[in-house]
Image (tube, rainbow, N blue to C red; front, side):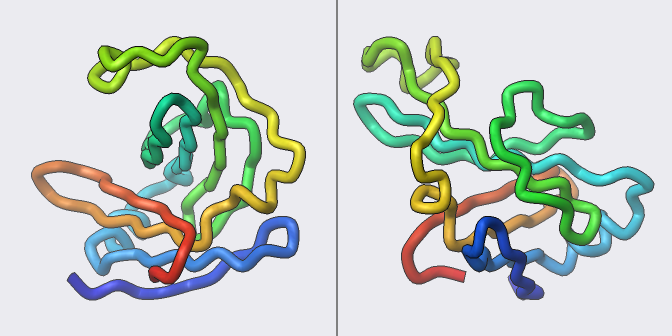
Length: 129
């Protein structure tokens, strides 16, 4: 799937944003911004996920600003315990303030829209998009 690449900056760090053509069309039809939260969960394993909402995430720690009808957030969290069963359900977690947020900010974010499945996203650190 073809993507349109853009960049935005937060705290002096350039972050690449790749939007699929379908995502761009869907965003153009919106009246309000789509809230996109990149969650980084520290646990016995590291989990990354992108959450989409029509409203501001209640737990979002860091607002990265608005880009093309996207309100972008980055939220680091840490689980209170490490159990294998947590991998399949929502783990009991708490906010995890970082000393140097810039070091943990992703280098890229990719957003797609699928007519059947809705919004999908991924983010990462090395190489990438």
